[in-house]
Image (cartoon, rainbow, N blue to C red; front, side, top):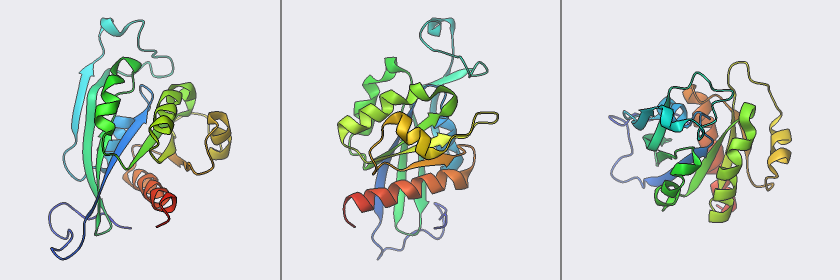
Length: 196
């Protein structure tokens, strides 16, 4: 599948456009903002704020000590896959104290991506549990940070106790092609779960 720019060669008037609302979850500092930014064909919307002393004791910076900002509401982007699939991406804030936004942002979502930082794998449990309880088809993307240990996706699947129908893939949230591949994997799993 190829990218289709938002101006120019999008779907013609006689083609059916399939809109997908996708939410991107994961722990604090897992790369959700980067993931949305890497793929969006429109200027992404971010609600980033500088970390302050108020976050001391709430935000665990172990393994991500260079992090200076955090998402306080959402990230938003859009990407057109193929000629007839457009995805509206909503990145969820990673901290538990902002989890009240998850329900609002997940309304109408057809699928989700849980972005997992293998250096801090425990941080993605809340998102995995949330999407399982919500009954939304999701994929787990293991964000391959520089210098992070590499794990086989099947090892992580076992560690997270994921159902066999949950795709688990490697990802580089900075690379648009890698992000695209994660989204394609998710769409394929949504179609497969619906028998399409």
